[in-house]
Amino acid sequence: MIYLYALVDEEPSGPLREGIAGEPLRVVSQGGLAAVTGEVPDRPRPDRETLEGQDAVIRRLAGLFGALLPARFGEVFADDDALAKRLAPREREVAEALALVRGCVQMTLRVFGEPEPRPEPEAVPAGGPGTRYLAARRREIERAHSLPEIEPLREALRPLLRAERIERHESAGPLLGTAYHLVLRGQSDAYLATLESAKGRIGGRRVAATGPWPPSAFAPEAAP
Amino acid sequence: MSGGPLELIESSDASLLDTVDHLLNKGLVLTGEVVIGLAGIDLIYLRLTALLCAADRILPKVSGEGSEE
Image 1 (cartoon, chains in turn red, blue):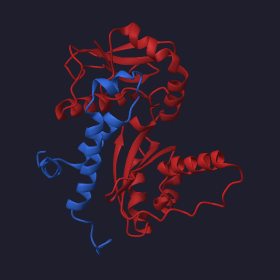
Image 2 (cartoon, one colour):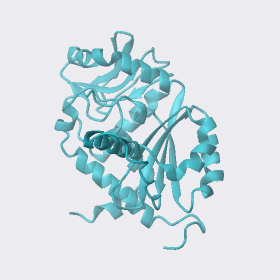
Image 3 (cartoon, chains in turn orange, green):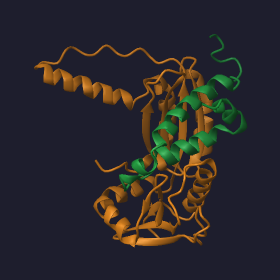
């Protein structure tokens, strides 16, 4: 079966070498895009060795392309045609994501500490229960993708950020959420230095940043 | 139930957890099959969140900050 590692839109600047099963990697073109794939005997198992192996492959590949979108672990296809069929309807979306991540790396920022109290909902919107329900849903969705607790940090980092994805964790525990930040290659040290100098501004909460990583948080998610 | 999480935290660095998050929870998805094919993934991710929380409790705090609690 065909295993998908990443989507790209150009030729690699060096040899692709091997994938997680020691198989030779190759590029399969599809419209204006290309998929980096390998042929594996079985669906890879999500154990530690394989995950670390895939991480190493993706990191190596990221060095060979100006823009690369990692695939999620476990993306297998019966053959090249099956892959092409799945990719074709997503081509435009993937091309846009590749344009976004070109020349960039991802920094992953975990935020720990006490949540800020929820803001009071604004005046009850006019309309019936349906409108109120939708307004409440929208607030929930916005909250799931925001971390007002780190606003002062984001302000300091803003000149370095090309894009941002935020996930708030509502589960009990000190992990408030994660901000995935896209920065230019070569600016991850500046990112970490800025973070270091600004981390005291978030009211006793703590942050832990790792990176640079391939920009997996900036890949389009599953089709609806 | 193994007593695994703490051991895992102590025997590895936090970036392994990030690796797991990035590979299992992020990245381009073209197939719907991945969710079915790797049925344990949601569980693994829940566990990851727990691990990250645990890491915060176990790892020593950086000097001085937030030292009450």
